[in-house]
Image 1 (cartoon, rainbow, N blue to C red):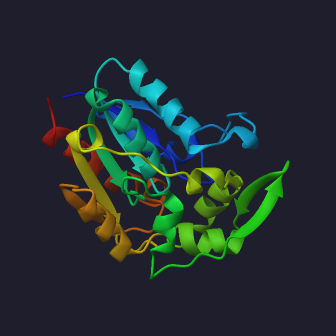
Image 2: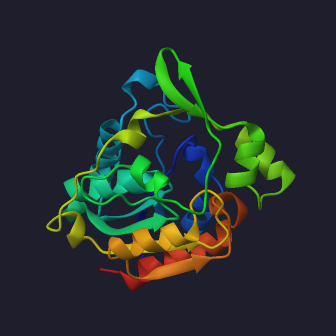
Length: 244
């Protein structure tokens, strides 16, 4: 059965990060929508307008444009984005898939989840861009925490595309309810060797959010680059398990 996947990238990244996964899903007959979040990739939204609310609104527009309820996949920071979109458009989301993603509880922020990680601490530089507080990762930090299991060529390719990240979306609190967010089936794909989000925190968030099933990849933080075939297989399996 054909499914429509909406793939939502995480912080610093853009839709480009899905470029190896997308053709694999499409080759199996699925439709893929992979937008740039505001201020990311090729999107020219000013950093001053980059907020969690704008992220969520952009994804809601994509979900609304689909011909059928979608499988909404969020990576890393985008866990908060897809959760917020499901809260607003529960009837249009067939399944939520959190890919080694942050899942704030109701009233919580991504920043709170980051601080709750007792296993991982990433030395990120705070900078200003056009007067907007942003975060920036040095190449060696990006390599160590996001792409430690990537080839040198793959890392160079990704590092050339990574951009600064506005801080505002991390500080915003997510509003979720049992009636909306809680009504959408939720799955979690853990990355066992993640050096950006500790496995213990991944499990803690997945359990708190009631995710089922919970699957595991032997991967670092960026399996869409390092293990696209294995990630594709997991997503197809989830789609088949939740076929309408």
